Image 1 (cartoon, rainbow, N blue to C red):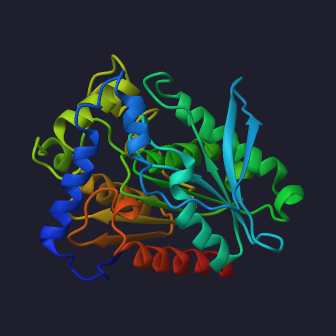
Image 2 (cartoon, rainbow, N blue to C red):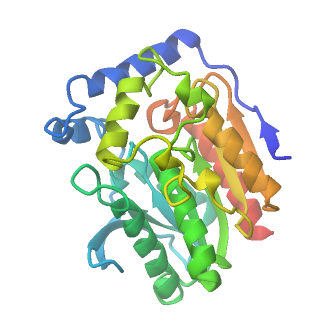
Length: 314
């Protein structure tokens, strides 16, 4: 069975509620196609940006250029981490992960390539997946010459975790040589059953961070015209895919997250398929806490860096 680590102190309940209310307030009135531009700006409020980041545009495999944001160590990299940001397939940007990626570069001597994948509703799924796959394959092709390593890792948060898992499964089926070079993946509070697990079906308008109206809106943006049961096809929901032959993965779940069951179920299936699996449960934390709760971010960075170091040195 997966390793269950509840290793952080229980956060203050009132502080958690205040954080969730702040996140909800940012979305107020903006969760429409016309309001998304303002919401995309609001979601990046207070983001700590690295001056060392290099912005580049690569040629994607599917006829679309893909912007990426690169951070490098001072010496040849121990591996290259392809980073896929959160925010529901329709908001967010690669720049929001600068602080986390900078810490991992400094601690592990890796390089990071954060992907500005296309967003819905302008570009419905699978546009985001196509861009994530293109960036990963680009790193696979130029890693040795560009970064001094052919080792690759993937990470994703929320929608980014969904995309990362889909990329890994695709590579196993279509590019096994590249898949074998994937040293590890860490996937935090991801969406793996887009037909909704029990914790998602039981959420309401008073749920923390992810509410029923928010989820229904982003589903319509990202997967227009695809009903809930159809979204359970493995091409959309990785929980239903064959999960054999995949790299070691660290799954992060939050007890106050409506996506809690998604991670529990995905980690269990990843493990049952014979893949090395670690599962961390963060008590009293909400969806997206890594990007919004500064009290727990250092603990999260410590945990992820330690786990990745073990994979790199193993």
